Image (cartoon, rainbow, N blue to C red; front, side, top):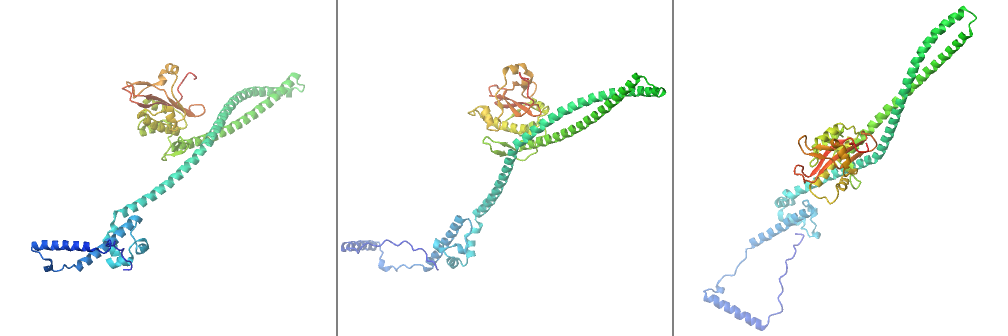
Length: 447
C-alpha cells in the first residue's frame, strides 16, 4: 500500500554484552531446568521445533487492517457529522488513504457498507437537529419582525392618545355649539311664529287701510304712519327669516363636523383597543408580544375572557355585574390588566414576595395601584364597597386595593378594578386575590 502503517513500538534493547559471570549463571540455570525435565521423562532434544501458522497470521493482519480503517471511518464521521468520501482521507492528517481502503475491502462503497455507517442513528439525529435549527431560526426572525412591529405601534400610542384627546375636545366643543345653536334656533322659531302672526294681522290691516286710502285721496296722517310701521315690520320679518336660514346652515355644518369627530374617535378607540390587546410594556420598557387576537368589544367581554383564562385570580359575581354596566372605551386595557393581575396572584399565592403588592404589580405593567380605601368611605357606602364571594350565603368581603385605568374624565375614559386580598387567615377564604368590581369609579367622599 502507498501508506505505511505506523511502526510498532520497538522492543527495549539489551544492555551491553553479558559478563562471564552472567553467562555462567545462565548456563547452570538452563542445566538445572533440563535435569528437572529429564526427571519428569521429558527431553527437549527429542521434541520437534514448533512451527507457526502463516495463514492465521496473515488473516490476523488483514483483520487488524480492517479494524483500523473502520475505526478511522467512524471517528471521522463522529468528528464531522457526515460519512467520509475518498478525498476526505488525507494521509498527512493521519487518515488511511483511499488506496489502502480499496486494497483491504476491495472498494470504498463496500467498506462503507460493512462499517454500517450509513445506518448510524446519529446521522438521523444530526439531520433532525439541523432541521430544528432552521425552524428555530425562522421562528426567531418572525418574532423579531413582530417585536419590531409592536415597538412601532407602541411609539404611536402617545400620538394616538393626543389625537384622541384633541378629537374629544373638538367633539365636546361641537356638542356645546350644537346645543347653543339649537337653543338659538328654537328662540328664532318662536320669534318667527310670533312675527308671522303679527305680519298676518298687519297685512290684513294694511289691506283695509289701502282700500280706505284709495277711496279717499286725502288720507289722515295716522294712517300714513301706520303704513310706514307695517313696512318696517315686514323688513324685520325678512331679516329674521334670513337669520334663521343662516342659523340652519350653521347647525348643518356643526352636525357634519360632529359626525366626523365621532368617526375619528371611534377609529382611535379601536386602534388603542388593538394595541392594548396585542402587547404590553414590561418593567424594563420593552414590548412583550402576545398572540394575535381580536380585542374585546366591551368591558364585560374582557372580564369574561380573563376569567376563562385565569389560573389564580378569582372573580366575584359582582365583577361581571359591574362590568356589564361600564361604558369604558378601552376594554383591551381591562383585559391586559386582568392578565397581569393573574400573574401577580400566582406569585402572591406562593407566599411572601419580599416586597409590597404595589411594587410587585409594577413589575407586571400595573402602575396605577392604590393600596386601600378610606375607612370612612367604606362605612358611608357599604353596599358599593362590599360583595359576596360566590353569591348570597357565601362570605361577605370588602374591597381594598384598586387600580386606575385610562385618563380624562367620565366613565367612558376612566375605569377602576377593585380587589380583595386575602392572607388565608380566614378558613372560608383561601389566600389569594379576588376581583370584586370592574368598571365605574365607586362613590367616595369627593363625589
